[in-house]
Image 1 (cartoon, rainbow, N blue to C red):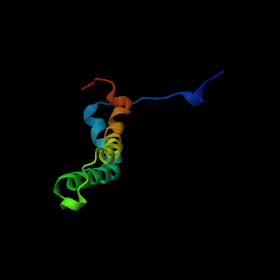
Image 2 (image 1 turned 90 degrees about the vertical axis):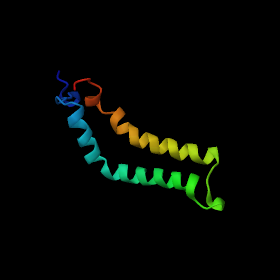
Image 3 (image 1 turned 90 degrees about the horizontal axis):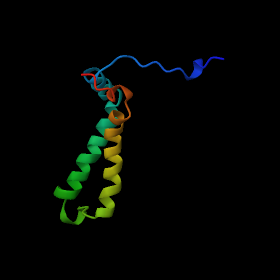
Image 4 (image 1 turned 60 degrees about the horizontal axis):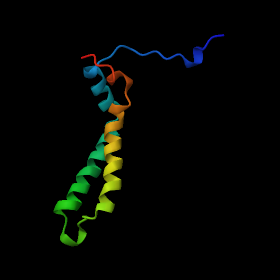
Length: 85
């Protein structure tokens, strides 16, 4: 009995190889989430007073989604879990 379908091969890599690869792979997602973050800062601080969004329940869900999208490609990368600089 062989388990060829579940075999995983992990290539040797390090932080300086993986970060540019992640940024290249997820560039459109980072551009979108970055623009949403900039828009949130604008609406919270610099928008006209009637348009400002200062409510905690309006800010937290979207900021959690943005933070998750920005951090998870790094947190879920198995090559970055190996401390090999």
